Each structure stands twice: as structure tokens, then as C-alpha cells.
Image (cartoon, rainbow, N blue to C red; front, side, top):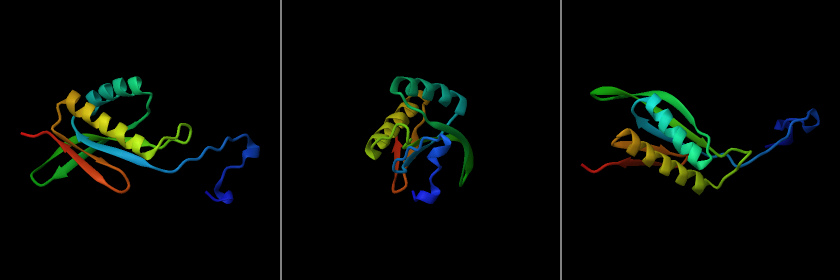
Length: 118
């Protein structure tokens, strides 16, 4: 971040920085059920995530779902691989707890799909 973009610390603002990185989990299902499941996961793992509703529209239909977001938070910065691993653990936990057969996990450079074999 250039000096002209930084908040002025003389105004009582503490400036914390880290490398930008995010991971998103895309999964279908009831968002309210998911929020309860996610709450138990974040309480056990000391984590904060976002949960946003979404609608998947595809050939032959559509389905309601949600997107779970994880970021590299400057107050508690983490390694990219740790954030990714946490996202995979959370996605797996969500699939198991909400009886979903698949989900996608995406970061700025790649996307991974998890699915149950039938």
C-alpha cells in the first residue's frame, strides 16, 4: 500500500496490513441450517467467516444456497495454506452436517470441487 493510500496514524488509527487472500465455499442448501452448523465450527476453531445467500441457476433448474467467505484478516494474519486448509475442513464439515453431495472451494487462482461418490 502506498503512503498516500494509508490512513493517517496521527488521527488515532492503528494500521495493520497483510497479504490479501480469500477463499470462498459455494454450496447448496438452507442458509439458516448452515449458519447454525458454521457457528459450531467457528466456535471450535476460533474463526470468523461471512455467509451470503445465493441462487444457483443451471440448465434444467435452480437451487438456493450460500457462499461462505474466509479472508486473510490483518488483525490475525494467517498463511494462505492454513486458510485454504481451514476452508476445506469447513466445507467437508458443512457437507456432512447438511447432507449435501457437493461443493466448490475457490481462491484467486484455483477452484476445487468436492463430491460424494454414488
